[in-house]
Image (cartoon, rainbow, N blue to C red):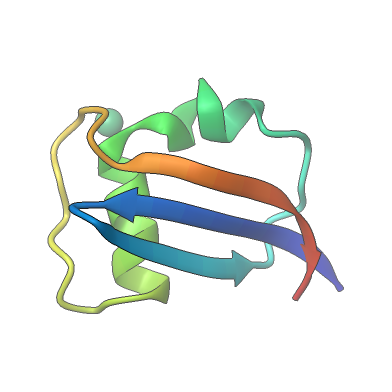
Length: 71
Ligand SMILES: [Zn+2]
């Protein structure tokens, strides 16, 4: 099944995961809802680090890579 591979970077740590969201281009990750720390932090918490804090809106979590991938 195809999903979306994402790599974020925050505080010198990289967080990567593949989820089953259908990939419709990178817009939502670069400019849309998932460009915001509030959503990015929840992805990191859910997929990478259950201790990762949910963050307020902002742009401190950096997007390193996003692409379509096999889940
Ligand atoms: Zn936000």
